[in-house]
Image (cartoon, rainbow, N blue to C red; front, side, top):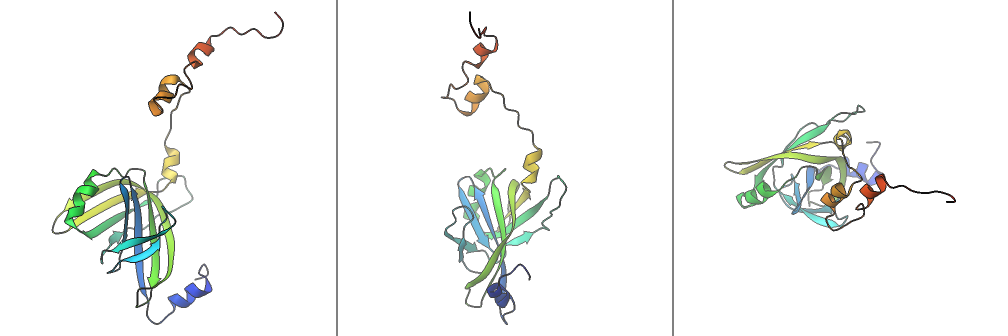
Length: 189
């Protein structure tokens, strides 16, 4: 409790509090915000830094142990979301979450569902997702730490072709090949 402010410490030791977890996933077509509470609450979005509705799904599913360490290797977690409406299945299947950020938060509300405190416990990148439609829709998202991205090589060349692959209308490097073998005269001729 040493990292909590005085009001947060008072909230935690209150006679009746409801702990909750919340997840904000930044999908390409828009964020998905859910909480383990049985109703919607408003929290500050990590994406917009503005208040946003986190939808209460009642049973968030499961969050695996969030691994962390000092070694330069892959750490991550697995998120299982359940109780999602079937109408949302197609939206999730169309999304490519790889490399997109996800925030995992833990917090406490009072019996009137006023948010007493909330803390981010992890910021990860989504890797893969598995959408399984059964009695109710379930989604399992594998996440990895940002450190994994540091290990990936990025081969970029200062050539016109490589630059135009990213920026088709930008001819910044179009004369680089001609300059490689150019005969330049320095000083007095």
